[in-house]
Amino acid sequence: MGQSLVKNYVHIIFSTKNRHPFIKQEYEEELFKYLGGVCNALNCAPIQVGGYLDHVHILCLLNKNKTIVKLLEELKTDSTKWMKKRSNELSNFYWQDGYGAFSVNPSQVETVVAYIKKQQEHHMAKSFQDEYRAFLKKYKVEFNEEYVWG
Image 1 (cartoon, helix red, strand yellow):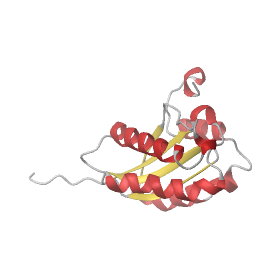
Image 2: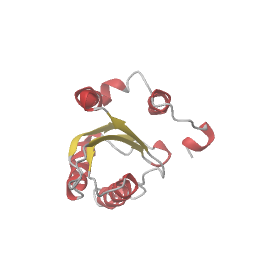
Image 3: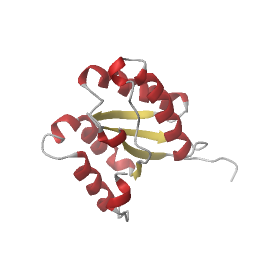
């Protein structure tokens, strides 16, 4: 086979350090656009970026030449520097070390897009921790509570 054809949708979730509510309304739209721009620069086409006060969700197409680790490294490093320049109140902005990355069936892309768009509404009833635990259980990821939030 002479050509490599790949289409991997990935739903990425990560939080601010200690789930501190840094992503206030005045920053969120610009931050989400910035994260989408980082994805674009890495040829990982962003489909939807969103989140809430203490975490983000990114649905993108993973480039066949990029690893999830490299994508997350670039996303977190670049956006941390960018956020710190926004305001003095963001001088202690950092992302948590870990992340979740889940493959998405092409038939479920619109469902995930809708889910990401409704983050603010969704988190009026459910904490980020409960949301993340639900994703881990849905995808049958074994985890230890002691290490997930560290």
